[in-house]
Image (cartoon, rainbow, N blue to C red; front, side, top):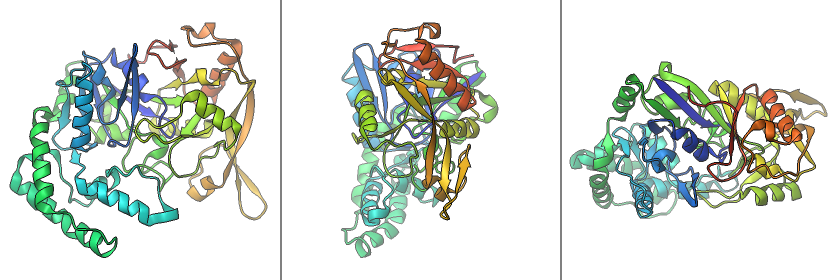
Length: 433
């Protein structure tokens, strides 16, 4: 029995798709446990590049059963677009299994998401407008629609009507928008449900049975640690738990069945959307990292904010997730730099002319908003490392940089990404027991 959790250790876009695909060659199931189509994974196989949003990254591996767990919010239209796109390229999606208990993003969730974000003005959170937050809000408010509701017309109509009763009042009176029609929405969801039906299963039972049979299950998180609704930079976070604990609640698999927790981190750091970002570079260095790393969102196309590696964030991720391993990605992007800064601590302005130094993540989010990085500098390298497959063959300065990140993160680095291709990776130690 081997349950492996793979999560983002920063603000997302760390290269989880590649890491999942790498480990996925050795696992039997890949289960997505949180988020919706506000996340993006890029998987490169040979000359083919796949941009995935809802589907687990293991979908491109013919030997893996991909699973969408109960913790995911599903927009059926987006799911079918993604399935159609992959099948047109020869990827078999019939193995996909979708939790009957997962919540559904209805058309009105997207409407609410967009109008409320516009209404917030300068206080906007930076949502993608895809309805994820409102769908999770309905889930917590116990007025959500789950996948199995799509197969019972009366129950579905009652739930849509109950949900829209308050939302239409808000749309009309607060936002000056037209009300959403109950019958049209119900009919649309019923039609989507019929197409979804062949994929639906009791995925908690499926995954537990697989683990009991000695199979290996990889639990894949969307977004990342610093976007966790409980442990991230609230309120500039997602609406779910992409940290390791979310894997259990998001799939119905108990924590005693987890053997490894792997965090994925870039050799620098990026963020999309609003919110604090202590090491952000609003200068030529930031533009250079963005250009070298092709830092544009898979889902949104938005330019990512770029900064130097933040060891405070990395230590925090190791702590709240209980990381056993780190996969360090995009090390090759730093090639050509004479010196590479690393953030080792924060200085926080107390507002009275004094500063407090933090070696660990401030609990007070206001303090985090006022944090400025304390850097140490490592020598860089100019050699092409994309074809290196042994750690010992990396330039000495590259080795030193990786070892310093490992030391500062309080977690071993077990694999290193050295380029975009599938084989551009150095395996320091096995990620699968």
